[in-house]
Length: 115
Image (cartoon, rainbow, N blue to C red; front, side, top):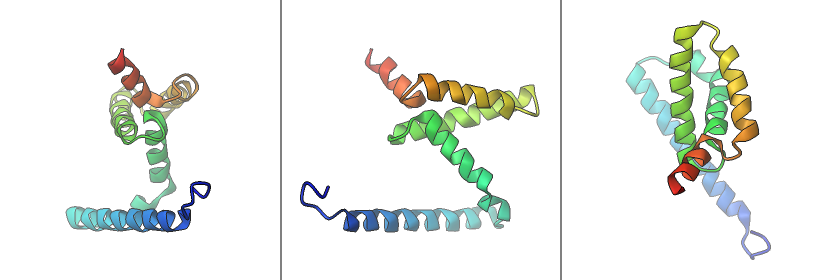
């Protein structure tokens, strides 16, 4: 951006403010909907699940994150019916996706759709 003559600080600041406002709104709506806010919502595991969803779906695209979230929740639901330790099965599957599907599941769906 600097090479093009733009100051990226203003854009980064605006993006951070907008993201913070959306996160605050989401937290307020969650508190209203649940009528209770548990400290469990602020655990590092929750953040880790969100990162796994993005990596699974494909980094850098909104549709990839949506596909990753759906795939994560579907895998959790199916694998937890098989065993209580579903993460032991899901972990190697996630590693395979990262190693062999550079664009994640979203990129794979895009390739299938265009072929």
